[in-house]
View 1 (cartoon, rainbow, N blue to C red):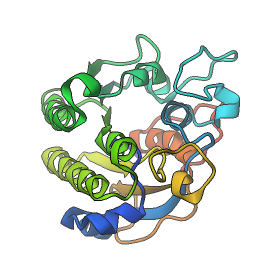
View 2: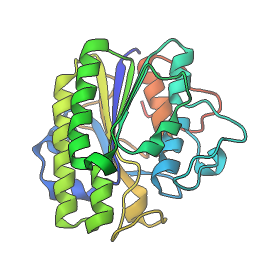
View 3: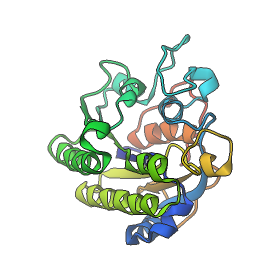
Length: 258
């Protein structure tokens, strides 16, 4: 198995917001790939711990990041980007929340693009990052691309999860997803997910509203129109490694979903 992978993560996107948004792309994605609206994240259901678990395939209790402040791991575990780099593969990241700089180690990325969502607005930077990622993929064809879209989480904190503004931000994020997914070649598997959900104007608890995330996989390696079984955010790194043709790191605890 050897595909390239585009991973798109919409921060704070609850699965039950997808139907409410009414974006036509969502039903198409259910038909052309495999998906689940009941995948789970890790506790605490906070952005940086969840991303560290996604990229390192272990729970926060093992990587040690329990809040949105990075601290070096006592016993370092190679993350997805380090694992790919060690096998001669190229990775790129595009993001608008600065703390994500720490999910990969120096030297493991071929390209990194950060646009400050707080300074330039998450609406503007979501759009610009999508366009920059599309252009970079077309020009350089990296093996793995991570596109982080922070608008939905920002709107959730500002106006409340499942508010009208929140639902609109989910719709807008799916428009970005549709645009870049249509721009990449068929050699790319595309995965769409979230790091956590939310309730009222917060998240971080063990409530289902915080812990449940969507997961879509469009790839030649998955069946079309089928629902995925049980899935956790720590399963993404071994799944992506498998799609690209790289072995999972022996320290990873997640399972491949393929």
